[in-house]
Every structure is written in structure tokens, then in C-alpha cells.
Length: 63
Ligand code: SF4
Image (cartoon, rainbow, N blue to C red):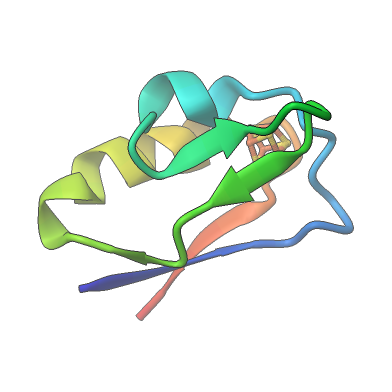
């Protein structure tokens, strides 16, 4: 299990992470980011890709 954390003070809701890991990140009807805080290990590559593309460096994996 991977713990995911997004600093919502930094997140600007651009949604790049949604393209990289759509099973983890989504934008709700108000275009606000929602995410799954506990992800399956199989999602690690997608989450790391989301970390790389996030322009605000708001995403991290909590080891
Ligand atoms: S890519 Fe980063 S700034 Fe954009 S919605 Fe995702 S967490 Fe927020």
C-alpha cells in the first residue's frame, strides 16, 4: 500500500496528475482535486509520473 499526500495549499487544480494516474487523482464537479490517500502498489509508477508533472510539486509519497 502506498500513502499519497497532496499539499492542498500548493495544489492549483491544474489536473496534470489526473492524466498520469486517473485511478488516484480526479477533478470533481467544481474542478477541485480529489485523490485516493491509500493506493495499491501497482499504482506506484503512475503516482511517480504524477509527482514529476505536478507544476506545484504538491504531491508526495509518504514512505
Ligand atoms: S498536478 Fe499538482 S497542482 Fe495540478 S491538480 Fe495535481 S496535485 Fe494539484
